[in-house]
Image 1: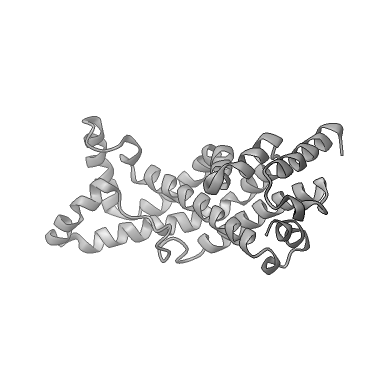
Image 2: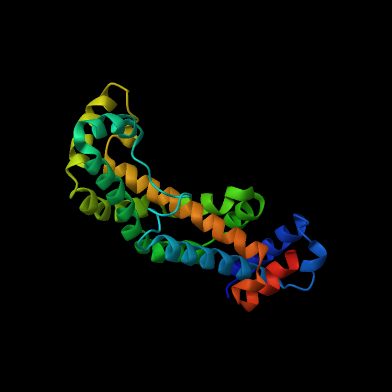
Length: 230
């Protein structure tokens, strides 16, 4: 371990003490274990989220992350259904969520890489940033490259539904007049964004579970570090 890494762990340990989160319980935890515990928690949460979302029903059947129709199309869904296009509307919503489910497993390497490259500043933001700190960390580090990876997968799925192309045509024009958000002017970009939102949200939820019940993870380092915080 080089001097820079040792300094990072010492700073992390000092920060943990400074936040006074059950400081007495942390007294017996080394700085190295504290940092290792945080990294393990983040990586475990990321892998759990991928397993939950990257399977059939991961998005479609989960109300917390289910991807609804884009606002503009959602508003028109009743009219489309009345015009005999209900099946197309349902097919598009299903395809959107299936696309997200297919794309999520691709995130593994980038998420793990972000954890392994975590800096002292990242650690500070996670420890002091509140309930959204984990979500913010992963979004900042991986949203741009993951968007590029997810988009082709999403396009492949939505291209099979005729209504997607029709939506893009109408929404694209509407966006030019400010009637539709630019980020929602394309089904593919909308789904990619919502898929990543769902992934980061679920990682945060999984990390909260680890904090609540570290022993239940079956990990010795998580039990040792987060058990001391309880």
